Image (tube, rainbow, N blue to C red; front, side, top):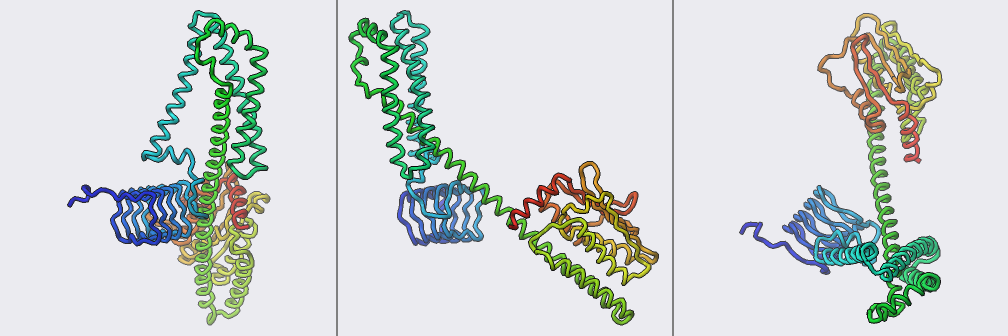
Length: 482
């Protein structure tokens, strides 16, 4: 049988706790409003399935296919999604703190439901809105086109009374909202108090407005049209309008606040997850750089142990100083001043100068003194200098020269390393040192930093960071680390 002929499984509002649906084909299945606690969906095909408003606590979806599935408004406490495909899945307003409650159903969520419930609610709201709009248009047309002065005057009175009553209702609802949200907890009590206050204020306003502006109008209209049924309507008939408006306004205001809070919470969680991911990746880069440098340095020391023990001792002391510097700081602190970074670079160069002797010359230049106190990512210069030694000076018979320059130009901070070694090949890919710097810059600054390799006019590796981004990202990562 063609799979397209199979009708999708319909199990709405079902109790399915602890059931085993592993490796089943449940494409397009509908489990909306169901209890699925401790249910096993491992390896199941749930493409386009609906699990809206469902309790999914401790449910497992390992290696399942949830492509385009709808899990909106469901509880996801301790859910296992290991290996699951979730492309296009809808997790809007899911909760990882508590199970589904009927109080969590909102008007927005119901309207988003494409089933008969959402359709009925949308039709009802549309009818009420259209009814109100037609009433407004009717009274407006009567005012502009009616030829009887008594009827026009009455309708003008009713329109003004309705507008003023609406303004009064919204203002009182707005004021009561702030009070009730602070001192009251139960939602039904808030609506009850709001209903009472709005009813009383509109009755008092109606009496006042009718007494001073409407008495003569209604007497004249009653004498002219004594048989109209609307004149026999009880006074409380007209109170339901303001009460309905006030309660609807309060409901929508609360729903809007909750929606904004949920969106903000989700954005905050996503932001924190992204920051944590970035921190983990930076930690990994930091851990990789240090062993790489240690490996090269120990090789240099090993080559001198038998040839020149004094130089080997000197290198060991310098290396000890260098690692006191690198390990004496917090491992989750990714920034340090340019001054401290250059001190580490100079110590590293001194280590290598013991090895190369007169074959190595170096200088460090900071064009403006105030730049020394700017904070940059740690170990951003050392791998570049290390590459200059490894791929430049070590391959030259004559003396090698390394120049480190720090300067600011057109709102960009430039960290440059020059060497007079062999030029960069035209097809050179990024080696480990350069790649680690690229990764750091991308993780921390995104498009606000770059690294460039040049052979002309001199062989140079240039790191550029927008000056405005330095303080901004430094403060951000300090806040995350704290």
